Length: 496
Image (cartoon, rainbow, N blue to C red; front, side):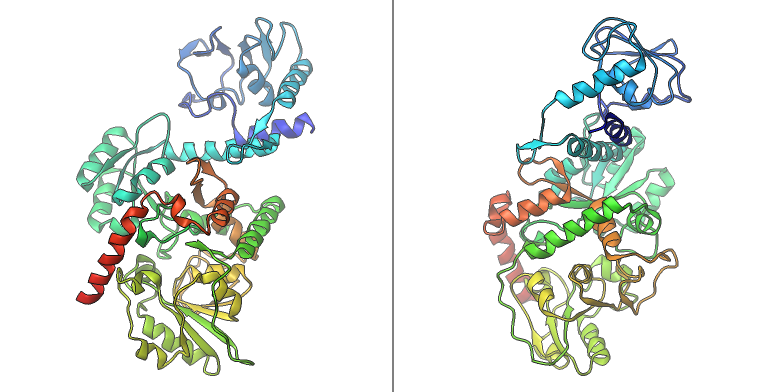
């Protein structure tokens, strides 16, 4: 591989050295950077600093003076900085010019053996650079988060992993006032779970100048339901809003409206989409073996997925519509000749959430109620899906199904759905399906490998989900609580 391509990839990822350390905080590019013999400190224009992120000091610098074994020599050449080598080492000899130093750096990179931390198998250099770049992006985003509030106790270990930074411990606060005090003292931001954020907390954070970062389950969450306390293997961390609330911009909406979608990213999204569809993966499961009812011959088949009626996505994006029964009624009015199947939300059916409708009322408008099994086999069987704000609509798009949106989910307004709800003018860009998939599944969420606990690309989690489909409990460390939750659901059904 050409050294120029490798150097460009490293520059773009900004990895190498202790890239997770604090930035140097320089107002301008330095004229001269010097490193001590031990490499523990850096001198910038005559001022000695502690160990800092090399990418905050090297780009744009006029000169680096360092010893030949110092990895900053390699990073400086990658960044295109002139280097004066003070003593011989593996990255350079005194008196060598830039071309000779570049050859040494390229040789050192080429001779190294790289391993995939998720499989243990040998990995390519560019693959390794991409993974380290992902870790850098995550750590940079986490750097300012000082405290988390509103996180369910059983999610906290996973949230701590998602928001981890080696430069500071993440505090968890039970009371909003305490959380705000910690964030304000640290000069950092407060991570919150949107459904547990009160208007009062939002107002107080704004008054105190404390930024809020919203954390929510990702779109490919885990093998198993949150209602059974299966820890999430994917979350979204949004610094400007949240994807399910169209009343304001979110990081996802901004990404989809303005983000660069190069051909390589679109190709990766297409491959990821194909893998998800082939494996029968939906948000909570990998399921290709479920039995799907027989459809009527010659009839258009429409699926209407139920939702939790007081869910935040329904309240924020439903346009005033919250009723599962009314959604089925509207679908029937638009599809008078179609066969309509209604799928109750599993949390509602389990008795944990609001939205239960008597079967007889549903069957006055739908032809069948479908329970059990995964969502993916159902989507493979139907022609179209009518949704309010359900993620099922996005999963249907990935499978080439027609999607009618009665509300305003995050995937509406990009030219891929029939939109009956109001669409923000901010979403004026038409996207191809793989651009939507790239933003929604690759660029926006974060993923944790349930085996190693390391941040990972979505492809790793998909592979784990496929491998664990027959033994979901094997990666649920809180499986012992699930029976208690099921009994809780039965009691709540009785009271309702």
